[in-house]
Image 1 (tube, rainbow, N blue to C red):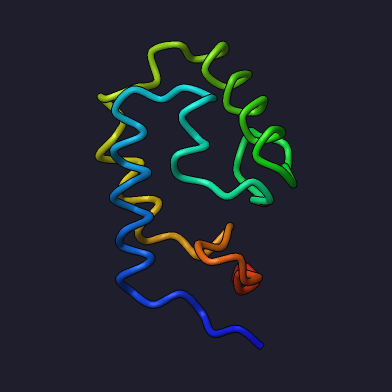
Image 2: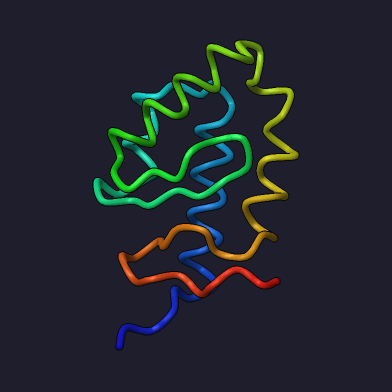
Length: 98
């Protein structure tokens, strides 16, 4: 069984995602997520590939086009403090509490 990502990998992911969120684009997700990423989040469908995640983000950004830099601090706090919903290193993340 693979070990959980260490704190430095999680912090690096949170930093890169916050940087991405400064000017988010569906294409930019390729810089922070793996091709086989599984995303689970509020208001978005569960996705199982980067392409599906990019489409979900495209839909979200179409719905809320000004969801950009102003929200980056909030996104950074949520990503760095939330239970894992996707793995940084390809391992299966822990189940969500509740």
